[in-house]
Image 1 (cartoon, rainbow, N blue to C red):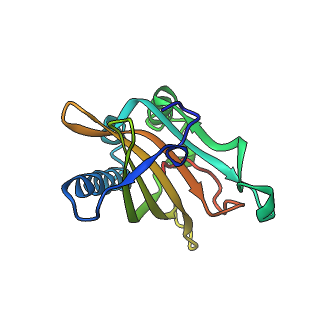
Image 2: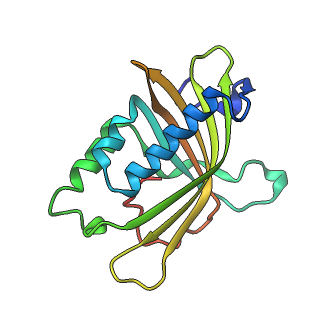
Length: 182
């Protein structure tokens, strides 16, 4: 799949809930959320494929007749493996003010829909995300809500995340920074 193509544009076949393939994908995404919540960023990076395409387009509020409600030019982030590695490496320096001390987060991932992509060995998982975040001694937590569209690929017997499209429900983010990963 090209980096511009999404699973939405591909022919998909739904994998039944409860099947071994379904649970394998769900387990992967739960383990990934745990690694991020525990700030085990090097472990998380190992869960990503070298060809990772990781992006969150900006939501645009417009009338239904005008088409999609996400920008095709503007992104909260548009990352690849190298840029994600750079962000993670930077967090261990004295210049990571946005995440030092680290945010306290909990990722609630749910409503898993697993699909096989026709003509590919990759699997697509659509899920909902609720991210709770608290910083420093702030008394008002931050919440991010949206849908994720993930492509998973098996490499040496293990699943890896090869593409993530994050569609946030927010048109304006009520968080001072996005120093965390979704």
